[in-house]
Image (cartoon, rainbow, N blue to C red; front, side, top):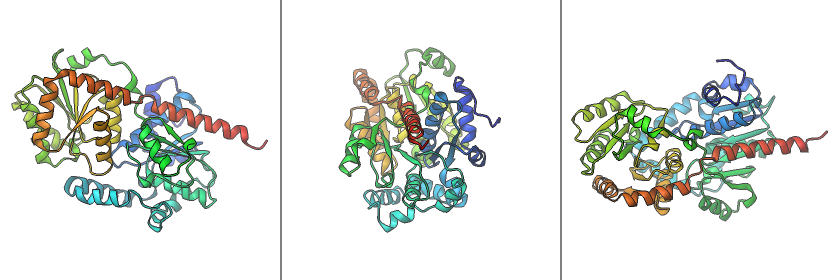
Length: 411
């Protein structure tokens, strides 16, 4: 791909550039970016938020030198693979282990020895790559990266603007660091919690969590339904998040949704795993209600637009995308810790229901499809919580910070 940033007027080409840049670290660093976005692949949401911000920055200024770095993958690929394996294994097979880790570090002292150790992971490699021509501003969508940048600032090695974008609806100490210049959060509750933790209110902006700009655009729902073979008046259940479920539970959810007595169509997003896709396709052939099984997709915004109800585990980005589309959610088997908090946020604000068992799941979905006015009220609540403009808000504040720094620079 051409190493010259594309025109910000062409959103599709800009998005392709951002996708390419996020997987080519050396190329990104060779640009000596003015703005660097640090993310990670754990759960996919951190990187998706980073890309959403990057796209809005390019739309604002197609001449901006921009870099996106998958932090752990860049500083230590072996450690990255180990952490990914440990994370996926624990949330699939031993969720209580992940819950213990998350809660045990929930309120850890930011100045503690443990936190200082975490804030040095990859520091030497990262600093060595940027020290000759450091960015003017770094924005982190992953907490460890934010801690490393904060540490470098405290050590006097970096003089950069340090922004942090939180990608869940809970405040975890891993996000909080002494040398952060601005926090962007998903809700007023989070802002208040940061203030309660003695963060300057002027350093906290309720932006929402950044999502792809397509989640605020119009969708031709009739065309999407026609493409998938879904009847015009059929309620649609969208099942996402199965990749983290044990396969026996995954198949059981398909059965439960199929047995819901109210007329409906189920869209299943199986993701990258071919064997999971094949199992869902096998079930589709014997399903009582219409079912559309898809693998990895890049049009979730369209699928959400035609859906009446989402079945999901409450990942931060998926939750936000559903809110932007005004799509009610039934949360099932969230990852312990951050996704428990996301689920609680949806339930507390009337945009979701939580199913704790397979029986709960069937009963809740049946009730909601048989009481469409309740679904409508939940959809209204969801829409009121969504911030589809979040990426633009973050990009605007980045642009403003750069302009202010330039104006204050010595002549």
